[in-house]
Amino acid sequence: MGALTGRMSPLGFFVKGKVEDWDAVVENLTRFRFQDLDPATGRQQSFGWVRCQDPFATDFSKSNFFFGESMVCLTMRVDSITVPASQVKLHLGRRVKAAMQESGKETISKDEVARMREDLVAEMSRKMLPSIKLFDMGYNAATGRLWFFGRSKSAVQTFLDLFHETFGLSMVPDSPYTVARELLGEEAADGLMDLPPASFASEA
Amino acid sequence: MELTKRIEGTRQFGNEFLTWLMYRSLANEGQIDCELGRIELWIEDRLTLVAPFAGREMNILKGESPAQGEEAGVALRMGKQLDNARISISWQGKRWDFQFSAPSFAFSSVKVPAVLTDTEFEAVVDRFDLLGTLEQIMRTLYHDFLKLRTDDGRWQVERSRIEKWLQQR
Image (cartoon, rainbow over all chains, first blue to last red; front, side):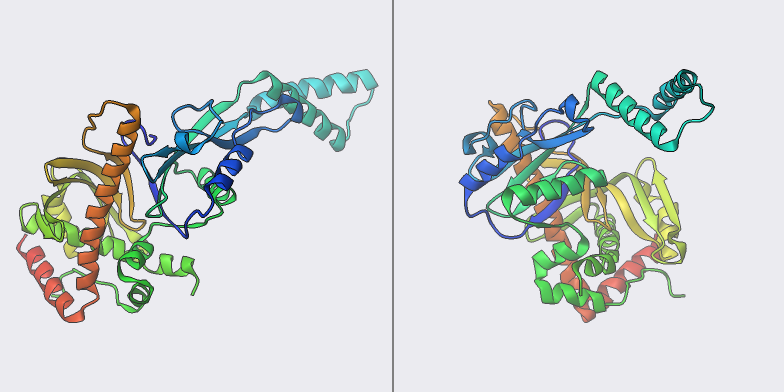
């Protein structure tokens, strides 16, 4: 459920501070743009920015990520290759057996098995297509309000780091406390800590 | 004090807020008056009640208007509070449907009012505007709750009303 169609499941944040230099942001978006996984590197995950209406577009200018005067919409794309452990186990067993037959030994060292596993995973990774996950973001640069459309802990953490690197700003998540702080100010919100919990239970 | 501790130490205000919201809605046939004018708010077909302490025992109620059912009344009288609810809000001729998680003040599965625009660009802007409006409504209601909650005298009056309402259910 992204931002652009269907039901929306946003995580809300308050961004601290404002962007001073949008040209620097454009440069950073290009620097941290999504780049395809390179099979030669053996990496199994790649992430970065793409344009919010086109997961294959990584050219950025203010005109293509600003929607209206202050709304910034971008998408974080995460590509991953996951080699099923059960298949690795099967193929590795066969290779270990073949290596033992070839060497005429009855055992094989743990280091050798680990190296064979590494080679095998890299080889299998090269034959697989990565899965693509897209996480939209809407950031109102005037109000500091930000919505991220992803829920998994790993996606949220990756996004927080990527946003900080790109925009030079950090943010705090919505919660009863942080929303109260926005509404009442810090001192009054801190006062909530001293209130006893309310009970609506019958005291009779 | 660290922000994380403040966040974790005040999550129950989300539960109190949602419970209070249900009371305000049910006690006044869904009508709630606030700074933004009159809002119609209903707890829809799913809600979760949690005991604030003692193992956080939970009731998950589904079906037609579970908030008005006896099971919800019993759970509330036993001290449980709302943790999560499916809510609909109507304001100025527009309607939003969504799930609200009280301890994290988080919205999910938000259905915003239909957007009729000529371009995809306008549709994106409108959808975010409508999401922002929903947040503004909920924050306005939360602000009203906090003003009551932090005023001991007014809160005691409100709490007595809620208790009385619960006993009459």
